[in-house]
Image 1 (tube, helix red, strand yellow):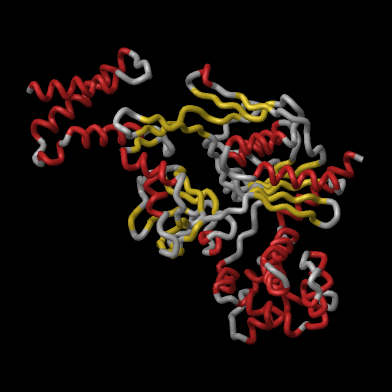
Image 2: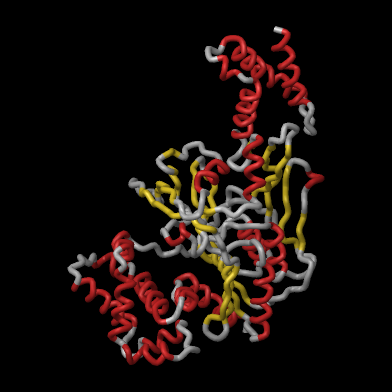
Length: 484
């Protein structure tokens, strides 16, 4: 009995000896916990499972687990693993994951990573990892299950949208290297910046892009934040600073402790003062939402696309006395005009959903018909392509593609693809083929560009044939006309 009283006193001291001041009725709420602990110590059948440390850890995990998906009690080993993860090189899939409505979901796949190449999409629900259900799984546990030695594989089971059938996808892990920012000029007068992640050199690269655009007198800009899961707050603030006047509020935090609220303001003059359209989708999260929300609040940009993911909470790591730690949500990010981001997301000014290929077109992709057609097309149209292949300085952009197709228009290109499918006795579903025409045309052009030049040039074609990018350009042109 004396031993049990001593343990109860130790536990009470542990709860009371923290930096948090508890209200008097909070101690009353602890009484049932003490009673349950006492009963387990006295009467549970398997004494080996009544180790005080394990029971206390279980109680803390359960308590923190009721808060939100991002707060977590980390035992000594988990806390050590988290530190090692920041130092070591590891193999991963190239996806950002989160828990939404109790379900493990893909926030976004990173471009040119194993998950991206395997066709994983933002919003996919991960139902299983290696046949183990993800129901109730914690974020860090899922991360550790998905990571592993480069070259090894992991099978995840996904559900896309409301489709009743789940799909197993086996992905080979690799060292994940993400190019944070890509930029180029579309046509002659539209700057395009794709921010894949707010990490590393993202801020510096965006600054270089804007300096180039200013030098070339570019007055129209598209900032592409689709499938950008976020990154560092500092990077988001620095990049937003490029587009707002000095001392303009960018974002602030709001928590229970008012004295700890933080406000972030622009410190420099605007580096770019032209018209801006920002593209967002359900994979735009965290730092992406800070940038998009600030530009929207101050009327510096028109947002086009889909509602963003809605992750705007602030976590801090608090080491505990036994070398374990508590990861706890302490605040939420708010846009300059006081809009909550977390759990809500940022609404676009113009809703424009991304086109999704039908199962028919997806099947054609899996059978490599597009790649095969591109190879045959190049061989059968030497006059249109041969001279550009030989010239080292040739660039396969959308304008060059138009030259390639001088003797044929887009419709004839699609018709040739249809003929190839018929020659292979492939059943063509007329409605799906018609509805997916723009998607099919885009893929054909990308594959032809990829084979005549390289992946970077193919990416330019992909951008210039992107329906949402085209709409953004139309909006920018309209804005310029209205200003004039």
